[in-house]
Length: 465
Ligand code: ADP
Ligand code: MG
Image 1 (cartoon, helix red, strand yellow):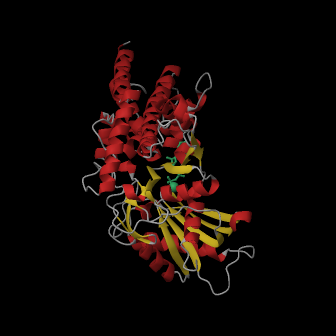
Image 2 (cartoon, rainbow, N blue to C red; image 1 turned 135 degrees about the vertical axis):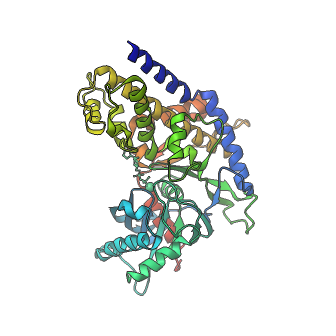
Image 3 (cartoon, protein in one colour; image 1 turned 90 degrees about the vertical axis):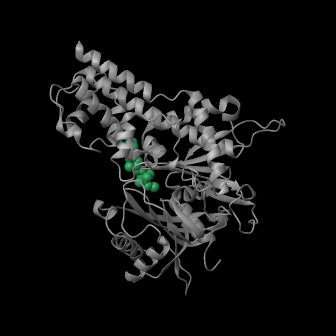
């Protein structure tokens, strides 16, 4: 009885500290909009970097030819080639390969990481078959999707600002990542030119627009989280170049670094942040994205094990190990709808090492997964809502005209695979927008749009175009 009481007290405190009432989400969205404006002004203290992507034209559908893309962003990287057939034939053929990055390379030296990538790319290029066509005398061209914050000075160059997620590679911060990659390709004897360097959000936006003309923003919910959108070039005070002909510029918000005292930051978040590779940074990302959700759940379960003997008299030692509980496992536990929560029980046995958990313990565990996922999804929806506010697509125009169809392209393993998470993002967004505006807003899964998007941008920025 005493255990139960103590468990209830912890759970109540967790519920309280993770709660995200709609009014709070609205004020978080307002804070994000003002940070966006600060970032666009070039205020160095802004939470959001609002990076200029140098993409002022999104794909039109006319792109054609053979292009490669390389996507480096998280646990895996992908190489892809696509044969584009112009307006009539569109994507004629595409092939891709996924390679997982050995963990030691994520915290090693820059040269080792880029050599590994270039070697995998060279191997992939070797398998190019007859049905892909490179015109005589032309160099192969590549769009490089790089999902870390980069200061770009052109569409095809940029220096790394900082590593995020699980990466902490020596010697890359401050270096031009295109030149790092190009030198590594040369070392491999691979003759290929990087014609576009894009963030994954920008690639997803480009790929999304190619598939649907009404796409105005892209959001990644994967290992990390980030968003990009189409801004009016004249709404970017820090842009000092010529106004692009299109009048538009794609902005990479780098919203993962958003921080605000409005964010419901719990003791678990604070402890996780403190022990992370990048303490004090990427606070919004740490509350939302796939790298962290399972770890937050683990920390709460550990507290319950300590304070309320959730897993018996001794605290299971496996539960003490950071990151043992991965977000895909959390998702599997959360989705267990069997009457005795069998799947969840098996996961607990696997991960925590406790064989026979009571039904009550399983229910508590599922409830914790629910709380952590719901907070993340609702915060992500607030972010999407803030972008819609920023571009004036959050409500029906006051002049009586119809609100244009507005599509958000979403990608990332978390959004794609964690059903309860993605449906919560959608219902929360609908709630924030209200019935009328939300009927014009569509959240669309742009599965692996960033790869195709990078290839499309490589095409439109080809040295031969
Ligand atoms: P990245 O973000 O690294 O480029 P992905 O978009 O493929 O790569 O996202 C991978 C992330 O998605 C994983 O780190 C994991 O957190 C999350 N994820 C993958 N599968 C699932 C799943 N079944 N349930 C919940 N999260 C998942
Ligand atoms: Mg990715």
